[in-house]
Length: 204
Image (cartoon, rainbow, N blue to C red; front, side):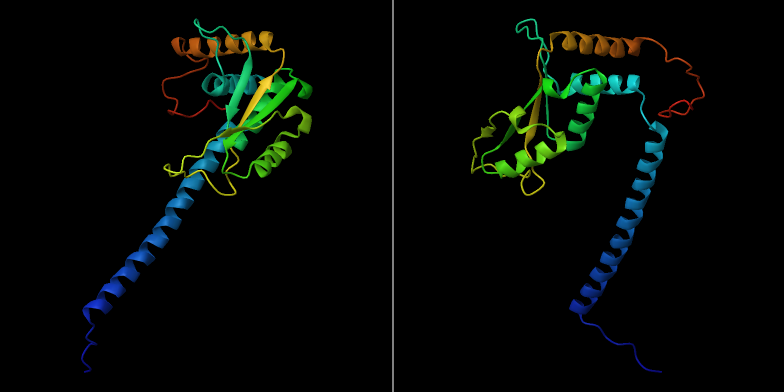
């Protein structure tokens, strides 16, 4: 009977490393598939949004990312800034649902001066489908060589600031929607039942 091959320490280490790498390659694929299944399932739970639901979600987005009037600084202007293209697209949909016209909007790019400013502005122009005349002069952030930035490369487009002109009334409406949404935390949900699965929306 032939004697088993004697492996060196280095060969054993390489074989072990290869086995661990193969395990984690399979495990990462399995975990990614499980996460995607959860995400896809919850996307179906939400489904298409009604106009009312768009106003609710948009008001919450504005509450998080929009400018607010303060007791020490009274400003009733609707200004929103964010770097996420999908959130920007949704916010523009929210504004349309609120009755805002495209020509009421003005945009301004906020971006690091070391980035490709023109490419970023072209990106936002395509996404917003705005007229170039609606874009003001870009606000450039000074580059600090001591700082290690992670938001670099072709996927970095800076932040887009969106202001609605003559938006005093709209600001009051958004505040009203936001107040109603936040006040709902003190009231039981309509149609709520104790045996409803946590996190699940009631069936339509």
